[in-house]
Amino acid sequence: HPMRSMQELSVWLMAVGGIFHLKHSSGSDDSFRTFWALVWALQLGTMVACVLILGRHYWFTNQNQFEGSVEGNNPLQEQNDEKEVGSQNISPLKSVPSDSICSVRENARNEGLVLLDGNWYSVGKFVPHHPGGADVLEQYLGADISLVFRVMHRNSDRILKYRKPLRSATSEEIQALTARRKDLCKEMMEEYQQNIEMVTKAKPNMPKNFDLEAFEKDSRLLYQRFLENGYFRPTLLWFIGKMLFTLCFLLLSITCMKLIPSSSVFSFIFPGIFLGLFWHQSGFLMHDAEHHNLSGDERCNDILGWLFGTVFIGVNGAWWREEHREHHAFLNTFDDEKGFKDPQMREDIWIQNKNLIKFYGNELIHFFVNFQHILFLVVIAVAGRVGIMIDSILTERKFRPWTKLGNILHLLLHYSILSQTNHPVSVFIVGALWQSILSLQLLGNHYTKPWNKIYAATEGNFFVWQILATQDFACPIWLQWFYGGLNFHYSHHLFPTLSREYFHITTPLIKELCDKHGLPFVQVGFFQCIGEMIVNFNEVRKEFSKCGRGSVALMYT
Image (cartoon, rainbow, N blue to C red; front, side, top):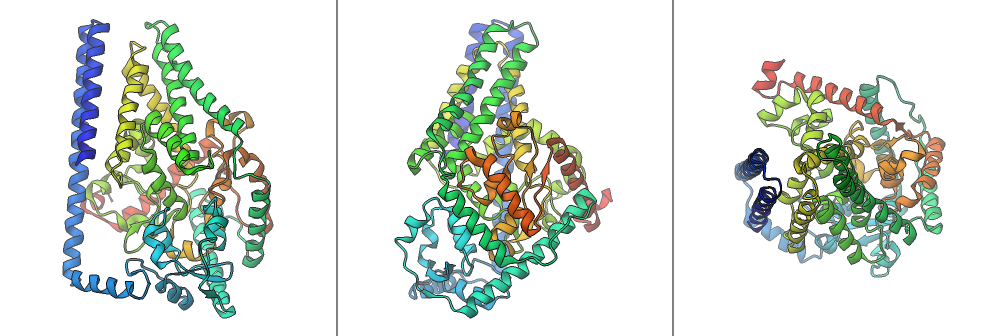
């Protein structure tokens, strides 16, 4: 595959370039042999990772094909069904499972309809062309998307100009969908209460008589208030300031390499920390760009995301954007038939919620789960940076030449940076360890929160679901830059297109909304969050051991 060929080529280019540099600069045989061993270890690790991942993919593909043949699926019959459905201008939706008991939602889903402001819109034929992903729109078919459509799209009014409603919804249909949303909100609150009791050993206060209609009205008013105040567009001065702030860390890293004597232990500690902060802050700017929150032009945002992500961090920005859109649309959700729906909260080497245990059938995973509460911090610190870089290359959904160009530019840029020091490997390791803090910051916002079935999340109320699956980090004002403003995570998940520049203004207003309607608004310290994550992993491990999944797990229990 061209993607893997480019990866192999980039690794070898880095190896040859690094060896050539050390051979002609240091003149130390020990340094040369050490670097040679590290390069071979990196190359061998890459090859082993490719073999394992491709082998796993091949095995699961064969398993799915085998299970399909056992069930007696007829591919020709499925093709005929698709043609038949297509002739009626309805998208084939058999691939979208639903456990909904609401007949109104099911009928509308099968017809490819969505409810928006009291009108049904036909979007069945548009599903495969949805810019945010076909699966995202499929999962919301038949549901009321009046609020989620607006908060997820920056240009919602412009989109509606090209769409005409099919018909108005009847009062019976609206009442049925509203009643269903109330039931699902109640179920999600019960799941939240059980999950929080497990993690914190304390019973959270939940509303006894939750007024969904009043909450939805206040939510729409809050959105309109933010829109009128211009909170969805950052100012140019803010963007320039953030970009210069990010580049300052790169300059500080190189300055320390030049000024601190190479014999000092600080000659690789300080440059590594500042390099890690450069990656750290570049990640926040990539996040903004791939949310299309930096510029009014989508192509410009994509270029900025490529620059800050693929070139500066080494993480494929386009890959991240595709997965992050699904993360917002399917936050902490799963499907009984297809497994995980939230790709960015899924991990293959640990289980963070008891509802996910049934999706792990690998013996090796069973072994690691028994120690996950001990190992997860070590894994994130040691393999976090390299892991996400490799993951963004191997799991890219679409081959993009400019992504490969960005990978090469990333290697050349960092070869140029690390060539300024006599301790390139040590500087990189310190930077990678420092950047792992970013992973803990982003995972900590959701890891201890409940997981829901996909139909409950998309069919219920979007704001209620996001509030129950999110939490903020409490930190002093002078440290908010370190979290990139994403310590205000309620603001980001309730309004994904909101600019980070205004999170400190919008968060108190969101807290007022939660307090008014009795919904939890959780703010935890960083170390408190780490402690709760350890407790959560340990509780899931205990639940896993009761299931006796696999011989290794059975031996352990």
